Each structure stands twice: as structure tokens, then as C-alpha cells.
Amino acid sequence: MNNSPKTLLRIDGSARRTGSTTRMLTNDLINALKPNQITVRDLADGIDLVDETWVGANFTPVENRSDVQRAKLALSDSLIAELKAADTLVIGLPVYNFGVPASIKAWIDMVARAGVTFRYSETGPEGLLRGIKAYIILASGGTKAGSEIDFASNYMRYVLGFLGITNVTIIAADQQGAAGQEALKSARDQISSLDLKAA
Image (cartoon, rainbow, N blue to C red; front, side, top):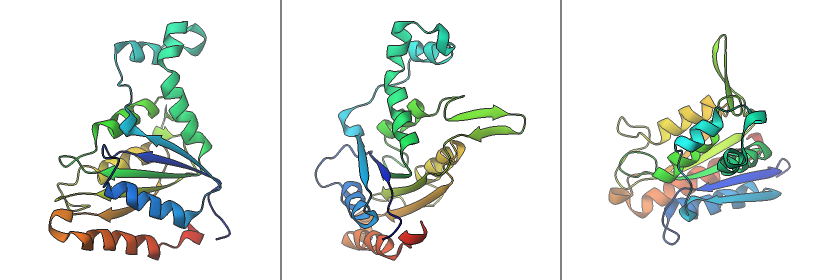
């Protein structure tokens, strides 16, 4: 393909390192995209949570931050730098209890920073992460993607849009509890049918 992504950021949200549907499908998608460079952020490795010290550091002007505050924001700065360097984002999103895994929510809290990845203007919030194409690989046991009990994909589409990432494609292997291998086949068919040259 002529317009392969130059830099792809892969976010793995599954706690499972083996037997994970989202990891398998993410591999399939990346093989189809053929990026020049891949950055991997595996959230099964753990991720810090926002706490009072983090909030205080975030709201302190850059020039006034202490060494402790700068260290507290270091992970957030790195995660944001990974996003800004990517032209394509692929998120492996298992549905846990109808919503996103805690690690995905923690990642979002680290990258959603006023004045850095979004800002408030006279017309309302404005996302600053433009020009990134996002793919969400969703897997669920019983939740139907896009249904009224799917609080995962709808949330991810909204929050990415809030940050300026509005070109979002969702590939779903949903309701695997009932559909079994058919759900996986359906997702792989979705990947095969993507018009990647126009992505």
C-alpha cells in the first residue's frame, strides 16, 4: 500500500497476554497497515493513576513546577509525546463490565490535559491532537457493540474526538459468549474489507 502509516501507536488494554482477542486482532490490523514504525504501550504492565500531587503539578504553570512536580508529570508527558508523534492510533479495547478497562481509563486521564491535548476557547472545548487516524479493536463476551449497554466504544469515540481525534473506526468482535469463533471471523472480515488506502 502506498500510504502506509509512518508512525503507529499501539495501545493494548487487555490484562491478558495470551488468548486475548484484542491482541490477536490488533496484530492482524497492524500487519495490514504495514506501518514504518510502531510504538507499543502495553497497559498490562501497569499505569499510574491521577492523584492529588499529579493534579497540583498539572495546574502549576510549567515555569513554576518543582522537580517533584515535573517527575510526577513525566509519564503523562511521555504518553502525550507518543500520541503527538503518531499518525495512526490502534487501541485494543476489551469490554470489562460494560465499560473500558481501568488501565484504559488511567491512560486517558494521563493524556487528556487542558492546554496540552485540548483547550477551552470562546466556542467551547477544542481538541489539539489533529490528523491522527484511530482504530479501536473491541472485544466483548456479551455486550453488543454500539448498543445501549456498550459504555466502552461510545465513550472512546467521544473522548478521542474531544482530544481532536475524530477519524475513528471501530472493529468489533462482540458477543463472543454466544457467537464464539464467528465473532472473531466477523472482525477479521471487517479488517479485510477496510479501504486502507483511503484511511
